[in-house]
Image (tube, rainbow, N blue to C red; front, top):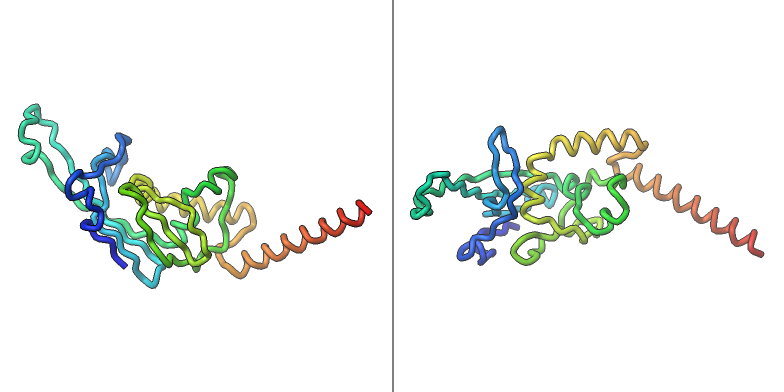
Length: 193
C-alpha cells in the first residue's frame, strides 16, 4: 500500500516540479515548484493517506555554477483522513456544481485504491465508489497546509445546512429526498393526464 519514489521514474532523472505558486509552511515560504512526493502510503485500513514531500531549496547565492552544492533537501510529511480527501475532492462534478456543494455522510469513507495519473497526480478510489477526483502533487501539498481550517469550515457548513458527517443520517436524508422526488413525479404525471 505504499508508492515509493522509485515508481515515479521521472523524479529520478527529470525531477518533476510544480509551477511557481508559493506556499507558507510554519512561517517558511516554499515555492511549490520545488516540492514533489517521495512516498505515498495508505494506512489504517484505507482511512488515512500519508504522503511525504521532498522540498529542494536552492540558496540565493549569485554563484549558480555549482547548483548541486547549493541545494538543500527537506522532507515534509502530511497525514490526511480519507474523509477530508473525499470532501475536498478536486473532481469535475464538484467544480461544475459550484463550490457551495456540501458532501455529507462521509465520516466512515475509506480509500480502496490509489492510481497513478501521469507524473503529476494520483486518483483516489473511495469505497463509496467515488473515483473522479485527480489529486495533483501541488493540490495535496496545499491541502496539507490548510487541512485544519478546511475541516473546521466543513463542520460549520454541515451545521449551517443541517447535514451530518454520519452515513446513517446522510442515508435518511437521501431517502427523504428520493421520496419527495417520487411524490413530485407522481403528482406531475397525474396533472398531465
